[in-house]
Length: 266
Image 1: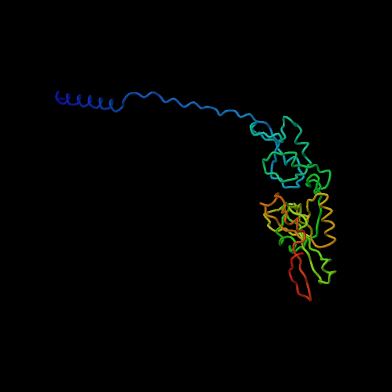
Image 2: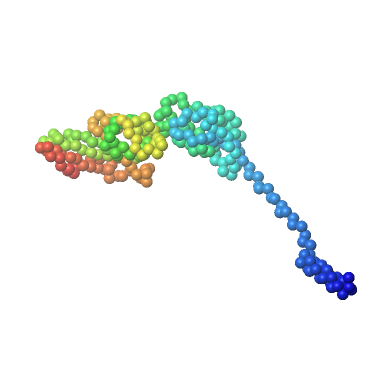
């Protein structure tokens, strides 16, 4: 091979090596993997919770309960913990749920009752009495049947006006609000809304009353007819309307010669 060709080949090799060197750059240091910081350990305590959704009136059995780790910062004094009650699960078995529980909700003794007595006695608040009144199955005396358990109602009494009848005014009826903001415990044998039902029908409505109220309602049933007026959820628990208490007989219907006429109460 001629010397000139060898020189050209050598120059090409040198140039290619230089280009490869320039393109490669300096050696990069190996990338160190980021250190994995473990999450902080949150101190927990085993709390007794509902293993599944428990409706009101449920007779609680062992499969309905379980222990669950609960953050100490979220503990409430009313929770049942394994540290304070190692046999808490066994002690709760056989109780009745006075109100419903969601799955995973901590079990509190205030929402339970022992099953030594009947179901209604278990869910009845302390100091109250359960009194059943007869209602119309068509719902004419219960807001068209839309009154559900745990709603609050006013009790309206409809009775014959004896005073007007004695004065020769003919047959007349008087309506007055007997009690306000009364809780409905059950309609018939149903104590809670089920499967999204919006209408509950039954022959009776069981109400939660004080002993004095129970006497008033029991006597009123003998003297006339009782109807339930549904209260708004916003109004439940508010002070009673003083105008109704000051005017117990708000209106009457006078029937003369077969013609009914509304007349204010004097």
